[in-house]
Structure formats: C-alpha cells, structure tokens
Length: 145
Image 1: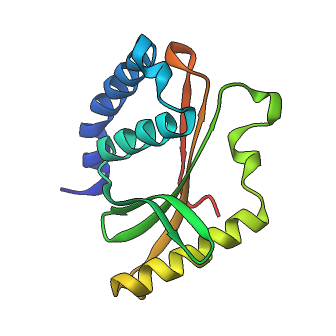
Image 2: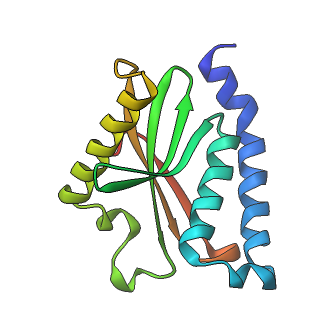
Image 3: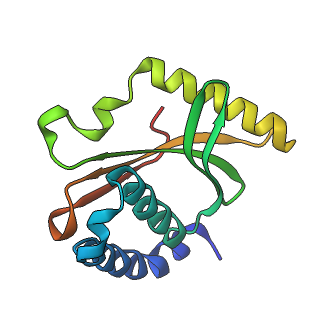
C-alpha cells in the first residue's frame, strides 16, 4: 500500500488513540507511575499506532541512553522522549542540546554495530510531550537532528 494511503487510513486510528491516552493518564492510579516512565509509555503507544515497530526501550551504550529504538518502514529510528508538565523549565525540545544529541548519536552507532545493521538508514526523532490528561499535547518531530 502506498505511503500516503497508509497515512490516510491510519489517521483516525491515531487521533482516537491519542484521545484515549489523554483520558487514561487522568486515572488516579497513573499518578503513581513516574512522569518520565509515563511519557515513554505514551510515546511508545503513539509510535505503534503510527506504524513503528519498537525494537528496544531505554537502550544504554557509549555513556548515553536512547529512550526508544524503532523501525519505521526500512529505517532505523532513534527516538528521544521529552516530557514537561509545564513550560517553567522550557519546552521539551529545548532540553535537547548539542551535547545530548552527540551522546544519542554515539549510542545509536553502538546499537547499529551490535545489532549488525550499521548500513541501515537511520534518523533521529523526538516525541515532545507537555501537560497531562486532556490538556496534554504530543508532538512527533521526525528528523529532529
């Protein structure tokens, strides 16, 4: 199925899933899960709905951690998840500075070499989450750096 048709067919599924995620996050028992973990869970569910296949979570190598490693079509995707309850400390994307990007790149090279796929095309995405529940916002930034 051509890529554009997949997007059209998948769009309502992604929107409904995002709404259900926001409602689910308001459940009282979710408050006991640390915010960073909740953000990664939301991001992983969203990426799955968008057609990604999650290969690894919290992959550690070369002195860095990659939140999610996924496969999107024929591309290896390294995903950094940034979550902020409010913008008092800046937006989620502002938290990814040059040093953080370089650490993620080193860990990505290590992942590709250890898995035996060093020549598979790769990209770096960011899932920026802000707020909780119905007021929460999720933004998937492809090719972020």
